[in-house]
Length: 245
Image 1 (cartoon, helix red, strand yellow):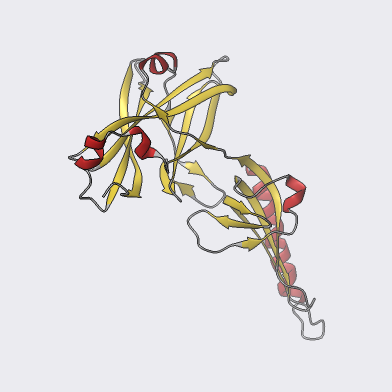
Image 2: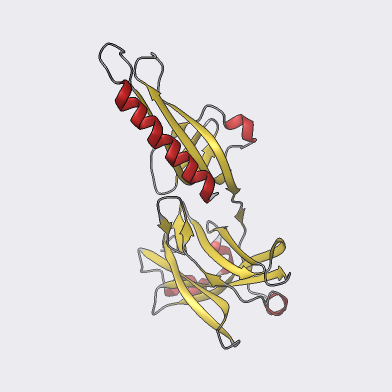
């Protein structure tokens, strides 16, 4: 992917240089071309970038089989010819990964025992930016992880542990069950919907944070140290509006 992105960027730079050279009044030509690497949510023929209110009409979205509600890491191409009489055009160059929104789970000790693969959190890499390991966007908890094991055959659950009143936080356990294969290192972005988090909390737990305008998410996960010990680490995943007031 990185090689492809470098090619895209180099190509765009060449195109821009060509634009500068060709911007002679006699020629009457002006073009702009650039590539944007981001996570997008699909709505019919448009996509919305992560953390943005804007949307882009994409000319070739049907070629990739994407449907309304799908969320994907994609590279988009922007092209504009000022003298063509046509509007600026956005098109998909590459779909890096389609990111499903997973459901929350209730805390289950049996599942915890089975889903015992250590993981670590990691920055999520775009071409020109790094996203922090955890963030919330449109009430979805995003967690960028890395682990030893295959992508295929692996499974992950985000289980609701309870509430920390002192920290105004809803607590979760992120657990993993992966297929090991000769030390293969894998990175993956997990997304979990938070709309129904209240279904996993008791009335008492909801009341304990009812005075807060917003609450944080706190994620616990198993981590393997350099010495080979497995410990529990935690990370605050973001803030959501408190609907339990």
